[in-house]
Length: 203
Image (tube, rainbow, N blue to C red; front, side):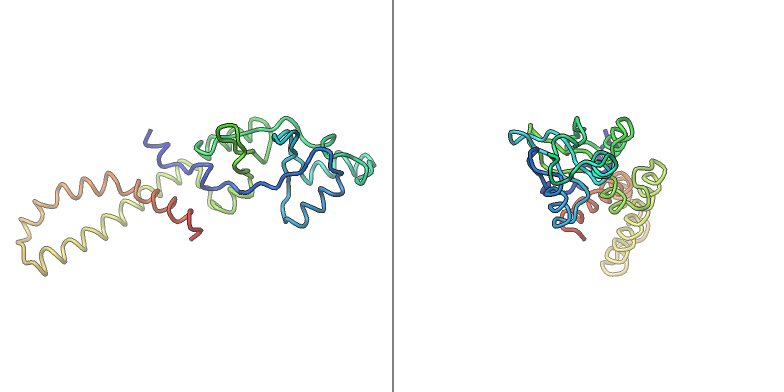
């Protein structure tokens, strides 16, 4: 349970809103949409529901490579199906495992039957270039967060309590025991909270 709290969620990394196209649109029109929107993929919708994904790989493999006319080929005929989906509250670890299982580099994010975003390998690499999904790296981050938090607050508490207020050092140590336990317990969780909070404001 604690591990899931510390792991980044899909919602923190996914891109939104999602660029969509109708399945009857020509590949040429879709490519123009991708270029204008500066995206490498679009979700193909049928009857207002996501039905497939069209990527640059589909363009090369299913259209250009086999000499199909982009202006006369409906994107619904050459898009990748079925869609692989993931929930916004699932961890990135679970999402990456799903990508690897199905051989996809993109997942559509669905919540209560509604498309709310798209998660790509590029999104993950940009946000976590040093491999945040690594359990070893996450434990290292937890240890660093705990040490930094403990050093900062213990120093701050010492300055206020001993040097300014004038509490005797032995009494300060006795009264600080609970504070140290709380610090060590929640420092890593606080670090994750900061990650999420900063992510909401793109800082």
